[in-house]
Length: 207
Image (cartoon, rainbow, N blue to C red; front, side, top):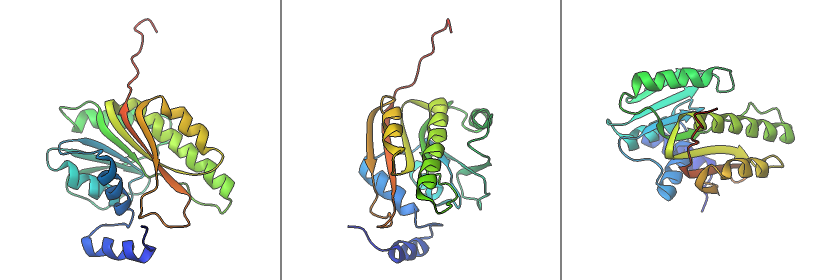
């Protein structure tokens, strides 16, 4: 059963989370068990840090969370923030370099989260298309940095561009499910794609 906006806003404040959206990730995690202690997690579109807080609690001091956004977030213990534009050419190289520098024992991420959202312009068709465009960038990054068997969570707005995107990424995961967390606003068109068991591409040495 979904609850009102005010309920999640209130308990987010009470429990010290920076955004009510933290409860969306908590509900996704409770249902699909994507993260565990010691994991390396990348959080795309992290500001103001609600998802990074939740991920940091789960992975613990033996894990690491790398949060990415155009806007700087206030520090969180166990989280490294990177200012960057995921749609910018060369961004994935920057992210990979940071992974190599900070992750030490891990060269690939266990989980990639994306709560990326476009700046809404009031035209649903355009807003929906731009949300899929951002989701495509998130998936492109995930293909580069996610380990084989890893997990991917990606927000997208439902609409005519959504089914082709679902089909586009379906073959890259052993399991792909669309899910609307109970904390989502009732009138919202956002939906989260949950991918588990990433099928990492193996390049042909002759290429």
